[in-house]
Length: 267
Ligand SMILES: [Zn+2]
View 1: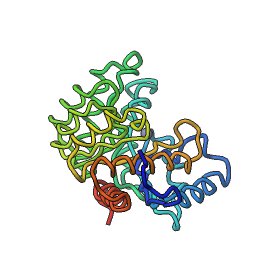
View 2: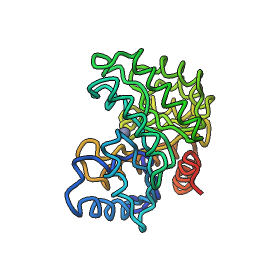
View 3: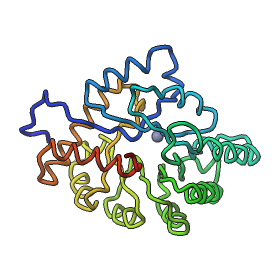
View 4: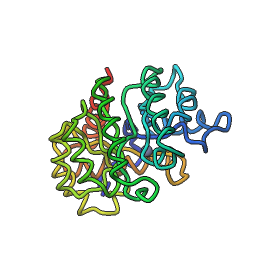
């Protein structure tokens, strides 16, 4: 779907969802190497998403004066499901509130619901923790980064009960009809390159999502690929979105960068 686009053309990409605190990236110099290659592939900024309090120090270590990098901190549904007890989860929430004051923090997340982890932590419990995180986002006036897997109905109920001050549903999986409901709550929906394998559904979700509310992401280091390789796929996704919207690719790429920065309220 990249028809007519110069393959050598580098498009700017703001990768608003990565995990630079991932344990696989802690070898000395590894992140610097990946960042350089990613920048050559068009990376113009990134947000590293939060997982749990233990990884905060590694996320802070990824910040550098020459990197346009910001952070979200949160209690990921997987972290909550893996926690040993409710006491541990409460302690995590208290730590989270302190970590919101840390360097580079512009959002609260990941937070949300994951039905694939309901064996470890029932959805009704997950909802309670999501509600607490949403209340914290409101108290601190921070946009949220939402992880929602097979629980969108539950998530919408929590979001309507306590609407956050903006944010994004990361790796939105569809269906397209849900996008307007999420956007009506002030949220953006973020697509990853897996949508390229579902062109009809991609067309539907692009049609259903209002201008300004569509973002793109890699979720790197998902799948163990180099960051630059993941960005090349996002570049294809940007081309596909431009074609569907009937806009020049360069203008669409620039707009997606602006929309990501606006979502996280970056100056
Ligand atoms: Zn993530």
